Image (cartoon, rainbow, N blue to C red; front, side, top):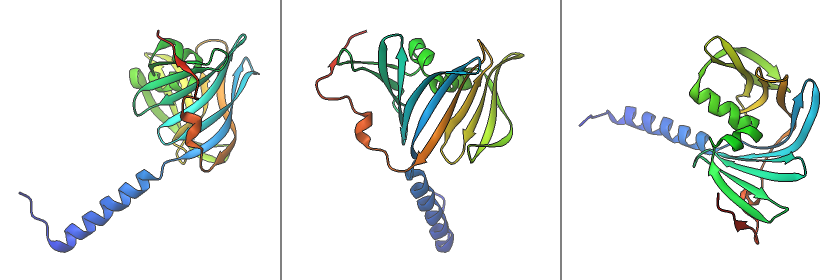
Amino acid sequence: MIKMPGQLFNIAAAVLLIAGISSAQATEFKADMLESKAGKTTQESKLYVKNSKYRVTVEEEDLKLHLIVDEKTGTTTVLSPKDKQYMEVENNYFRSMDTNPVQSFRHHVQNYDSREIGRETFKGFDCTKVLVQAGDRDLFTAWIAEELDFPVKILFHIGEGMSMELDNIKQGPVDPGVFAVPKGYTLKKQ
């Protein structure tokens, strides 16, 4: 058993308490997510972030979907307002990553080489600039806002000059209801 002198124990307990309080104060914000291809905006959607969850709307042809990503549980809930249905998939499900630039970036960070390549300010936020590579090939560059703990800009080096950036970022409380499956929706089996 390790014994600590009383005063040292009290200091250690205070540090742990402060660390617990600051990690409990999670980031909450709303923003516009702008996706571009070859310099032209191809999609603009609302983004809501609260704790380990975020919600974004994507549109594919005539279909509008809301993606609710829970990074803590590793699941994405896909809401289809047109059909009043929802589906639950793993965050690393290919189709989910194909329509969600943030999840695609995070998946690649976990599975390929990534490194910090500097610091920059973007939209008023101090950011860590991260490069993701597969061998000698650059895959992504992202600006991670430390204050938000979220990427505010992602450049995709694969493809046709695709990028994602956040605009009109407003920090503050986010209604937890935006992360719930609406009443009347039915679960669609995969």
